[in-house]
Image (cartoon, rainbow over all chains, first blue to last red; front, side, top):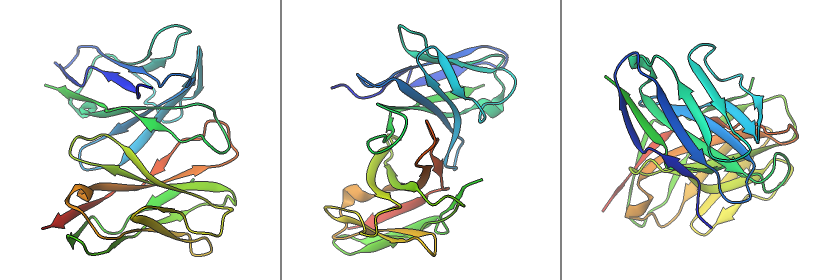
Length: 116
Length: 116
C-alpha cells in the first residue's frame, strides 16, 4: 500500500507566479489535511478536506490560497501570486476516517516551496 | 484554543543511553489524543507513538515510551537505548477526539542529537 504521495518535492517560483502542490492520499483514505512548516518552526494546520468538500479552512490565509479535493484525482493546494513569505515546506496528511480510534494522520514527504 | 509547548529546543544523548523529551499542552477537553512524531533530515513526518487521554496506561512502542500525566497536562517521550538513527526533530502533537476531522496541533519541536 503506497504511502501519501506529494509532488513536486521541490518547487521554485518567482514572486507573483502561481504554485500548485499536489497530494495523493493513501489508498482508501478520503480525508486530507494540509499543513505548513515555516523554517525552524512546527507544522501549522491549514485546511481539512473530504472528497469534493472543504470541511475546515480556518488555518488558511484568506487571500491567494485555495485548496480542493475533487472526486477524481489528487488534492491540490494552490497559491496565487506567491511572495517570499510563502517559502516553506507544505505537508499533506491523510486518514481513513474522521473520528475515533484509527484516525492517525499519515504524512507525505512534503513539498518545499522556494520563492525567489 | 489548544496549545502544545516543547520547552527544549535541543537535546543530546550518548548512543545506548536514555533521553526524555518534554511536552506540555493546554486544553479544556477531556477526551483527546496525543502523539509524538519524528522528523529526520529527510523531513518525512513519522508517527512514533500515540496516547489516548482516556487510557491511564502509558503507551509503549519498543524503545519508545511515554509518561502521560493528564492532571498536569504533561506528555513526555522516553527513548531507551538511543541509536544513531534516532537523531531527528521530534514534535509533540494534540488532537481532539470527538470532533470530526480534528486537526493536529504541534509543538515547536525538539532537535535530538545522538552522539556516538
